[in-house]
Image 1 (cartoon, rainbow, N blue to C red):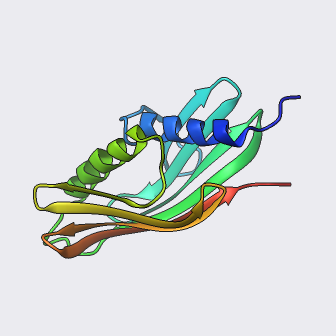
Image 2 (cartoon, rainbow, N blue to C red; image 1 turned 135 degrees about the horizontal axis):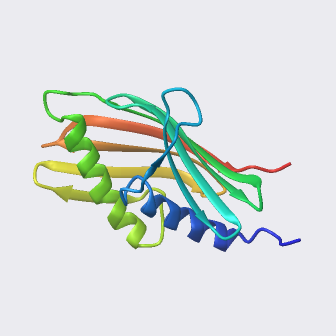
Image 3 (cartoon, one colour; image 1 turned 135 degrees about the vertical axis):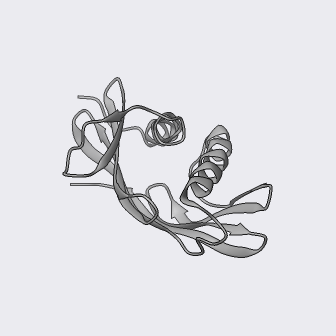
Length: 156
């Protein structure tokens, strides 16, 4: 039986995230009523991002290795100031910013990206094996969107 490689897991998570929401990956049928689901499979690895909502949304990303869950992240995001940012603008800014972060081969905090009047921030504590974090977008210095997340390895 193959053993789990943490560097391979990290690399797979970055590839999966880049290929699904950020990369415009195809949705799969909902696994729960009214959920939006995106899946990425590569060899013995599988990734699922399943979330509810739109302007305010909550979801979970999970990774399986040889059919066993090995990593999970939960998140909750929301528009704080609809007068400064539409859900579409938030989505575009998030995708542009995360694309740049993933191109660096990572997906956790310590990242900032500015475009037009918007600035995206991501901060986190811990490594991909156990972490908490927050992303937000400011419009000319006013926080208009925020998301909190946490996750890590799943062990039996």
